[in-house]
Image 1 (cartoon, rainbow, N blue to C red):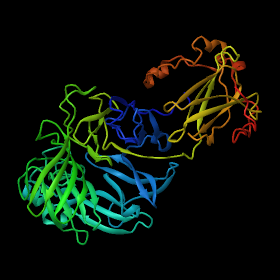
Image 2: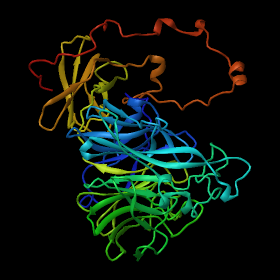
Image 3: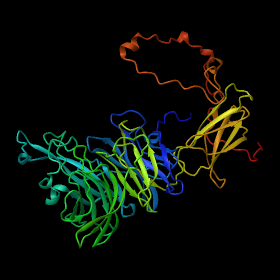
Length: 551
């Protein structure tokens, strides 16, 4: 009621094992192609599926990717990529917010690159001192060996930079065309024109994306692990000069002998790593929307023995056989997806172009299954992750007060929320006869979901809400609000809790708009039009009573 501008996805948790689910908050950034439906942007939900924070309420409905908790200057921050998506990549910047949801730093590539990053990776490294960013750079290229001879060809060069967050200085840059193993010489898996995302290579609008970098990780020795979706390979790169130290191909047996395969993968992460062994997690899409290599996608943990040149599947996280909102589809997303191994060994899996996420026990059992839209709704997300997070927003709580007829018989109903707050345990409600009080405590209630509703038995003309933590400490107050009382004409469409909300009108055409009968000033009952008289300069910082009155 009090935040009508917030239009979040309705998250539905249909599997929830209370004893097995990891505590924390779920971080997602759903988007839709074509645009429409809920606001796109970063969101935080709790394990019950209740909204905690709507990023679009703070930053507008701009597309975002990969919201996650990051460490910067020894404290937890919120990081995500924000920008506009193209077919298979995006243009935008990395955002770092503090625990009040204020922007601390906007990070972008520098040097000879385009100045905008790509959405596939924005990740802090070295304790938050630097940021890893992917860049998709379209460049002219001779594609005559591939039969393109009517003009110059175009390819996407996969690039990533590591830049210092504070200064923007580039400390490392890598380009796929600088190395034989990552050049078009090995681009036979996705040739020009094979897929829409892979591109045709004949124009800058549709360059051949032969590599498609989609994740970067950095180890304690300064080397990098990157994922190439279109080569179905992982590469370890030297942090000194960028040369390929080793390559793990998912759909060919060499150079590592494997007891599994993967293809078109996303989100490769080092879990443990040394010179002889690597434990890696990744999301195996097993599909590029053109070619399929398995019945369904899955999360994986693999063990690589570099001396024996073997790779072994140690854990896999499959979709459950029965999935609410998705009973028939095999669940094999042709794009996006992730796996996050949590501290207790559970795994969080985002199902990419499907609007689902799940949490699995170490043995693969699904302990949480959630959806943010129905299947075939074109709502998708890049990654779904879970983190502990403590935040006290800079903005104040927002409240709406309502009374059916402005009498004690109908009382006063309060609706209150605080976008992004994580430590509110309860709400106090104060009422007074005027916008400057005096104030009396008229009730308290435990916080319930994103918006808490409370009804006081007495009518209150003016009121405000007070957020309280679990220890009884006052966190913040809302501004002062005048109670909404519907007129006698409107009251027929209201009940004791609120007035009816009408359906959104269908947008008329210009001709239909011209033909419609218009309201004129003579048709308005001006004597009944109201405003908040007597409140000038008195909205902020209400002073609670020194002695709390008993209710």
